[in-house]
Length: 423
Ligand SMILES: *Cc1c(COP(=O)(O)O)cnc(C)c1O
Image (cartoon, rainbow, N blue to C red; front, side, top):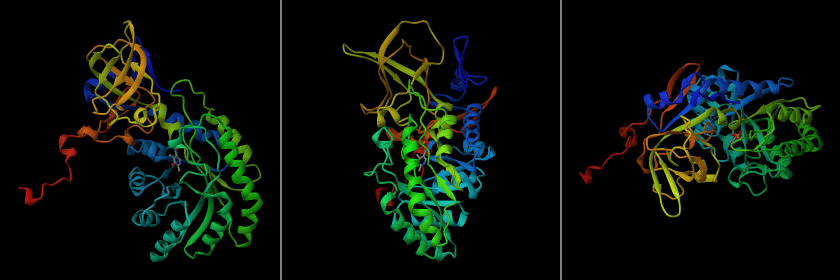
């Protein structure tokens, strides 16, 4: 459910006509609905109310500090994958005790920053990382709370680029070697083992991979870890199941968060842990759109192209994953339907939002909304072809706020200098 709806043929974001936003802030622009964001967060959070849990929003899905603030106010924590995301979360008012730090390549300065900030735990992905973490923690007189990210070797049945829990992926440690890894961690004086973690992929549209992954982690916990670690005086307090629940971009039918929660809660029965969840896409994906203006229509013998002012620099998902994004007119018209590619201005043939898509024939200057653009939209935007990044707008009822201004030409060259030798 979201709050982008037509009234008398015109698209509204909550109580604000999308056309008005386009006119006032220009295009392309990202528009988010606060009511949708909050609702998605609350539905997800409440689904787990039967068990101790923390919903740690995955910052990489949408890292605007206004959104992060909204989730922090709802009681949410954050899953971060870099020092930059930690900075954003703290700026947004996050409680460090609800921040988990994931990622295979944490650098020393990022680790030190997170340790000094007092985050809840590091989701450690290799033995080498443990060594580094132990050294840095010792150097500043702290103990680093860790959980081990286990690779359960489960096929999430999603796009290969966003599959992370199969044997050949770079993520996590082999489940069979995890006891060895845990023992090593326990032997390191500046690490404190507090949990176990896995994250198997993104945009999952069925329950079974989640259930399988949990069952594998669970089986291993019960059979090997709990007993062995207990003897070492260690208790697993947190079980982090990552994120990955999918959304409907077109006709996918992902499980409802309540169904997902039921299955997971069932799988946890008898375990005395706090559950950590790291949802990203399911919270923000359908809470945002990208509005773009039609610049030109071009027809060749072969094809029709609708050329818009947004491109792969603003929203890369179609180019990167070949993914489907619905495209809707901001003002509905009863014009004839055409089949066209909707493409951007970037000098790459991969720069498209849709291929061979049936849409109402637009005219120059018409506005289109690329739907489901709230997750992995702005966060993956770049300045390729030297386009300033688009603004982000947050709608709240019949008000809207620019929560990030459009970049300027000066922003494009910020930090660049011409050396004296070239003067
Ligand atoms: C990307 C990521 C998430 C969020 O995934 P979604 O599919 O957006 O829910 C959660 N945890 C980790 C470790 C991630 O890398």
